[in-house]
Image: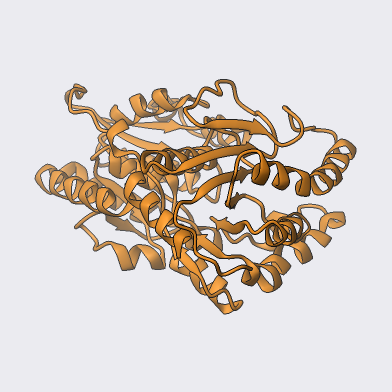
Length: 392
């Protein structure tokens, strides 16, 4: 790629997530865009899969790549894929000539058949190209059926052969940084997340006396440790029956089956909100006394930095989290968080008991966690790092 420096970036972000609202991917992109905007740098967003959720109001320009809605039919998905590849050079040319863009950032664009057209035409049009890598997926999660095995070549080939020709790659963890650098990528920036701390914490919420609410926010599945948390909550009843569990996330069929196996006396203490808008998520997080990140061990946990952890810090609540190698670098047990062993409901339960039985320590840890988060995850500060990285 070209090595010319740019004094003032004019950025367009191509994202496979929706924008501005949705789940963890949408929150990441939105807060990154907000941070770039607050740093007075021109930025716009192109949604590669169209609009998935409702409200699209935002202060920056937002457009769809081809379709407003992404097709669900497998054949139409294939047609859409070919159409996107063909249209890519025209889209880049429009961004260059009409909007004077000099920088493209790809988010969620992970297969080389997508990225190669961006690479070729960004070089041709003298546009700097960056990719954000948030996870490193295991083969079984990429190819649930045999006829999709070819995707492995395109996915891992992107890391091995293509990323080195980008102007830079942005990653969320040391684990990902090592993978990227191992494949001859020279310019790698580690940014854990972009969190708007001003939009979360509120001291006005009134706690319900004599009740402890344990909170989880995120997709309810095995990887995120939702079911380990439920098992930990069951164990907790022996020590602190005055507790409730609030799951802020989707009501999946797996979760429904898990809850149906519980006795009513415990099931009645568990609330599942279903999918919520951003403001409703924050209101529900305020209800919680302790927040939990129970991700199970594996490449998925090591590679990423959970959106919910940054949002937990922003709430200024005590946090129980399972351990990753990155967390051992960033945190000390019982200083910013309380560590629990992965895949271990008993260990999660022990962390919950510690917070419930040590309120003074809980407040100290919550405040220290908030301070760490503000110093390391703030969306304006980290967007400034990103802008400086692009200017190099």
